[in-house]
Image 1: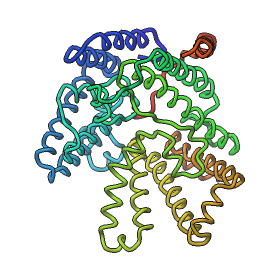
Image 2 (image 1 turned 90 degrees about the vertical axis):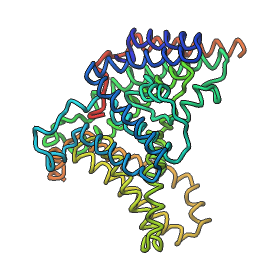
Image 3 (image 1 turned 120 degrees about the vertical axis):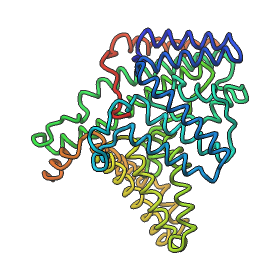
Length: 395
Length: 35
């Protein structure tokens, strides 16, 4: 169901009207029915059955984790293995015979759903959320965030559902702004991104014959295209969410202006970064600091935690070796940046580093360098491993 | 919201609608590989 279609507009407006005029269980039923219809257009009957089953297993895991918090690792491992199997990761061919593997379960929106479920299970174990089955199911299928995020937290969803927090102020202007945001998103996605797509790097690009400068430029354009496509998509669903009364979190904040790779991850796909920080980086970093050697070497602990987090980010984005490299390259960027900051702070002192950072020339130069490196990493996002080897060969 | 502000906002919306109607390419939705 394309976002620029009469069906999507009717679905959004009708759901908003019905949700404004209903309360309690009926309101939940309206939202769940709209979300299931939307998901059904992508998944079909089999995909729906499998996805609902996954959500139910996720709910069971959350109940289990709340009852036995010390066995949380069991629930997390089980769900992660199920996700790896369902997405049919390419490395599975090394461990599973061909006829044991299937592509049927790699349904649309699975990666986002998996992270949402895992968050619910982990937070249930720590006792920071209260679960209700139907509300949880609506949270999982929420049609504004089902396919491509933003990854909303259950607490944020529930708070807005209960009316504890407001999606937007109940004014005419706020609703007008929400509609404008949808229109702005549609223009970004269906006008700007669509026209950029023709110049962006494609998976079937003739990397052996095109010049290296063209390859570099096409990679830059891919980054800009992806920004307009994905942030346009987010503008649309955030605008629709505001009208429905369940506002998804923000996801982009002009990543081109990042002066370093750390800032870049705070400005691009923010909801994913915050998920990875809370559920991968922080626990890993804390565990590393508690262990002997890393406890004495916090920079090494940061390097380990940040590289692993980026590897997880890479593997979450895709199932092939290229995505492992995408994560690894970003891990290297962040480790280099952290080491540089550490060395600069020792060499210049805190005050000196602050002055250097605030100088205009330094800011411009570091923004350009960050743009170049973060944009170039998208080559791993687009090309498969064999094509990447061809590029390496030419270098 | 005063009248001038409303007119500016409506004009901006109208411009966005015009851009969409005139230029929107109705290609296939870009679905990220493997998502």
